[in-house]
Amino acid sequence: MKIEISATSRKAQGTGASRRLRKTGRTPGIIYGDGEPTLVDVDHNNLYHSLRKEAFHASILTLDLDGKKEQVLLRDFQMHPFRQQVQHIDFQRVSKDKKIHMKVPLHFINADIAPGVKLNGGIISHVMNDLNITCLPADLPEFVEVDLASLAMGHSIHVSDLKLPKGVAVAGHGHVGDAVVATVQIPRGAVEAEAEATAAAEAATATAAPTAEAKAAAKPAAKSAAK
Image 1 (cartoon, rainbow, N blue to C red):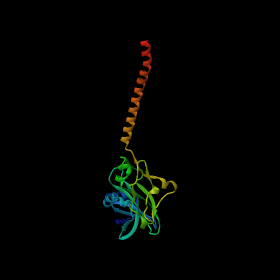
Image 2: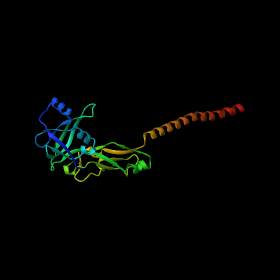
Image 3: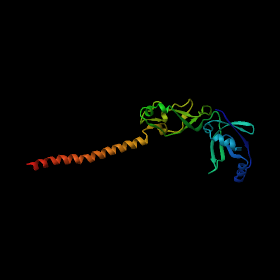
Image 4: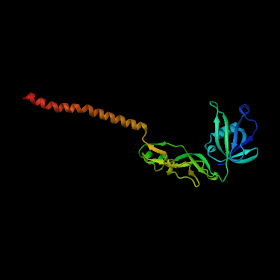
């Protein structure tokens, strides 16, 4: 998906300048990476709605800066503590021949036909919702798919089980590949109900046991009385 956003270079900086800029409906930002950092501002409304789209956070963006286009990544943004206002935005330039490190969302499919769900009434627990990867800009996927079709009750899917697109590798070392992505579990309510039923059965058995012992002890006493 090609996403483009427009920006204007700015010279004024500092808290006062940023405050005045926000009052005009613009959001201050910066572009860093190869070359000198560039101070910019972007239309707040367009930026706010773009940030609500998943792809905006995990895609190579085309930034139109004063009519000149360049490829960037969204690296950070700050929101107002209680207003729906973007306070600042950070972009990073990318080079087509240099690998990038990104966090991309995980998309789960076939949960409804997973044996642990369909046959055993389990529920899918998403342990991870995104994945850190490294790749060249041209190979960056919008998301990584997690197929749950064969997931059985009590089993898990690990990072090492994922089928990554060509040119994409998991970022990190050692234990990352063994990290759990999703698992199938018995619903908590069912576990609690089973525990309560077991406790009730044990209580009933404990109550009945003395009665049986008392009856066994009473038989010799009754025979002695009859003599």
